[in-house]
Length: 286
Image (cartoon, rainbow, N blue to C red; front, side, top):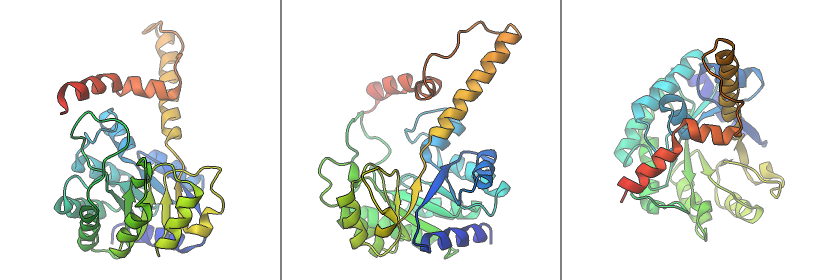
């Protein structure tokens, strides 16, 4: 079955009492680099997929078919490298989640994350994310599990509850997703040692973190098996491409632009038209 070996490798990694970092990848070459450098898995994040496919910021502008095709390109080239795909909110309700899982599984991915953030944006809101009701989040995980054909495919329930001002129900959400059958729970946003300890005691499945702070000690002891390495390599790669093209443009008289004055993050915001999208959000989202 397509992707079966990669799924088995990821599951074996999740079963070990150790914490591994996940590389941020966006195409076959970046996945191959991650594999050759020793990463045991990579993630195609929604934000990175939007960047690489659309040149746009992370506003759920990407369609499911576009995400699936990008994942398929990676898996076709690196079939034994475990690819985790961030499927955001599943591109709709629980029935849409089923479709997302069916298509991504067929593409050969090793794991799929489904989050409980209320997406896409309904208004030009700022600050803490809004979450779907717990029963809606649980139903999406149940639908994802029901849709998979290969039992080795890893379904990860991602929650943004830690980003709320008072994340009192952090353990409650994680426990509900674990009891629904999720193979792992993914804590998005900053989480401290007390929150991690509480979740670790509440769930009987592996934990995935979006980042890890110096304040967290012995993450593996509390059930953490995967930590995202962050998307800085992607930003730096784009900055390096910009600089290389600038040198060539000067050499051939195409441009006399000065050296880049902004850092990689600011350059990325400029290239993805972040300012224009913010204006459109203000104008059109209600």
